[in-house]
Image 1 (tube, rainbow, N blue to C red):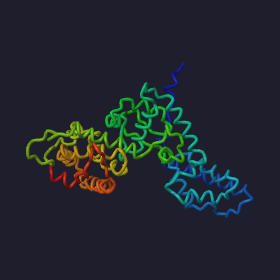
Image 2 (image 1 turned 120 degrees about the vertical axis):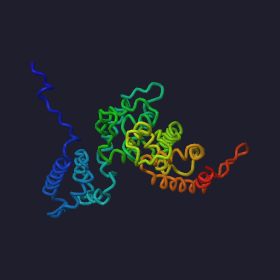
Image 3 (image 1 turned 90 degrees about the horizontal axis):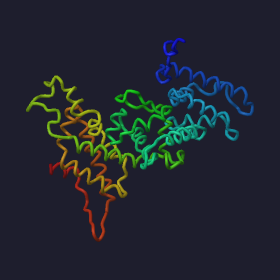
Image 4 (image 1 turned 90 degrees about the vertical axis):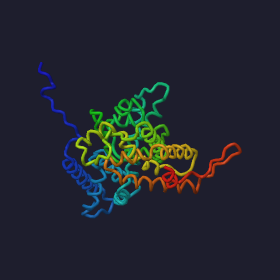
Length: 349
């Protein structure tokens, strides 16, 4: 019998041209709303309802996600107590929010998929929920999409692929471990990071907690890997004269250290300036500025991202100002004085 592999064509939906998917979704909206307007004699719907601008907003929000489009239709059409026009306005008036669509069915779908995914993960004594939150929280909160390989290296977690494999319907996890992981639709992180929608605390991703985890991971990576003349350049050489600089950057710096150097203060800004973790964070930052500041600046220069240094120091200064206004930790056996400002640390270096 002829092998099916030779006569089988694999169609990957996420690789279909976006304009083709958008066209289909737009047609779906037009057809469904036309049917609603025809069959709901109890509602006063104008002939041109919904407007073309409303349809465009819905298409942008759907972002190629048919389950989102289907959920919008259910939310608008099946509500017995609210007029369809009012239901539609709830969605189009908040173009960046997916709250109302979630109430209509997406949240239930996400919960079912995630619970099944967590049940598959076998992490031994560590427990699957904590591991799940660490990995998925990082996927959702990193400021630049990372590959499985880089994410595993940054977090110090060896089983990232195992954790993400059951989530193939929610995340694009490439078979090539060096290709970035992508989120299919904004409603997924919206759901996981909203306690009113994700009511299972085992699944809920609390952004401040995971920003802290990623920040400390970034600081640990920089602590271990930053060093003087990291790319082994000749003394006094101009970067423009180093012909193999891109190759040296990839070999000596790499994606993990590069991400840590560029984005660690972005994660810092996601952490409140109070609570029990503040002391731990500031001690780690103080050590970083004392021991690794110049090496960090060197890496940013080699990457062509020296402007990041200015923005990062500004972020630290803002966070320091917030902390210094709230931080008052004293006891009989321990008294922590006000932390040194970034300016003071720079002067000390």
